[in-house]
Length: 182
Image (cartoon, rainbow, N blue to C red; front, side):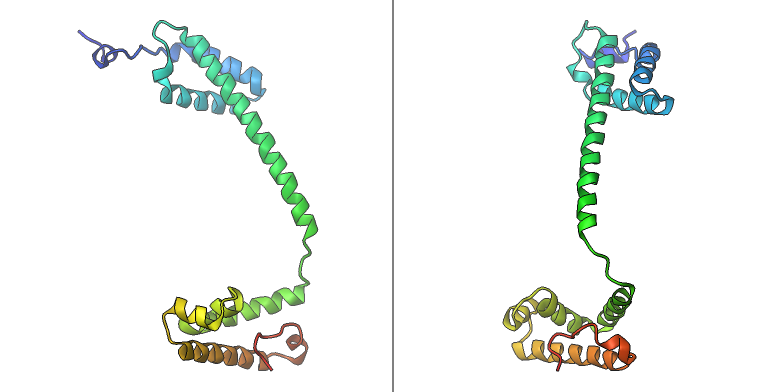
């Protein structure tokens, strides 16, 4: 009777179960934590399975698996160090930014809400010109409409935003300028 490994040809027989104790002990000594050690062994076994074709027939399976555990551990350390550096650098960026005062944040949220309430074609036209910085002719080309149609849509969108602006209390009005307004 042939074993599955024999029928596949040159694939060596892996006795992974017999190596689990050694792998877990080594992983535990590297990580100093049982849960992390189990994760490390799991990751190493996945790598071993994916790279089983690189195992030399007649080689020392235990040593090969232990080296995979070691390399997985080192890769994890490097990854965590790299992540820590990225987080630290992001912290410098965050410190350099200034939070908008609450009043401005509320006002911007109101303006955003009004912008999203505009009809699709008006919102699209205004976005292309006011946010993306396209010229009217470029925006008309992108939208696939005549220049006059685009200008009309932008005019109606600005009028709708001005109308929203007129409905706000006087103290909330003087913080933002509507592009193209009076």
